Image 1 (tube, rainbow, N blue to C red):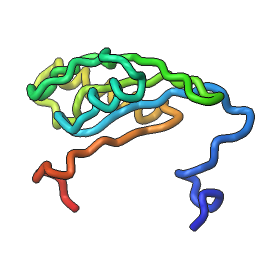
Image 2 (cartoon, helix red, strand yellow):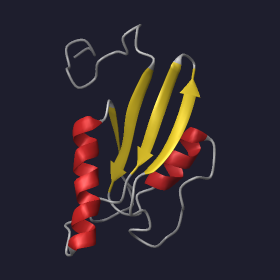
Image 3 (tube, rainbow, N blue to C red):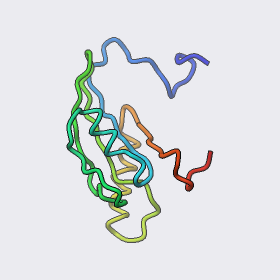
Length: 114
């Protein structure tokens, strides 16, 4: 199937100049590390402690003719208390609003199915 046949993977239109990229995934999957790499700065905290990112982290990247607002979000979990519920609301809003979703997963994480 080519990219023109699949509505999920469409080519970038020639007039497209800016976009909103949401980096999502499970806790400790490498979202902050990827965000830092994409924006070529150490903006997001990188640690082994899960749920360090509680509010979205906003970075910016300009490559070629594209200018992107890149947002890193808290790891996706089943919330157990109010703070976690609010964090997941931000993630759900990002899924609906983003021009591009980047789902990061750790292939060594046994919680994820193949």
